[in-house]
Amino acid sequence: MEKKTARLTLMIDPHKKQAFEQLCATQDQTPSQVVRQLIREYLQAHGVEYASQPGRPQPPSS
Image (cartoon, rainbow, N blue to C red; front, side, top):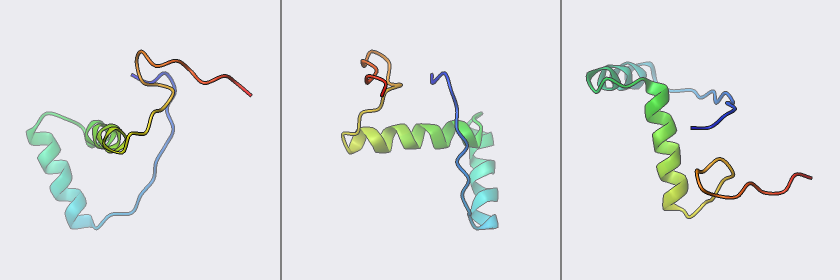
């Protein structure tokens, strides 16, 4: 898991938000957990590497 966190704010239709939160609850997950997983899968599907992936070397600091 990542050591640092950053906030991502987005706008969503209230009815979709409610449905999403209810679905997450039925799967015993928080909406944040699901969104983080979706982002990881999206990055992987597009071949994007990022520094906090386990086993991947950190890019040199500038």
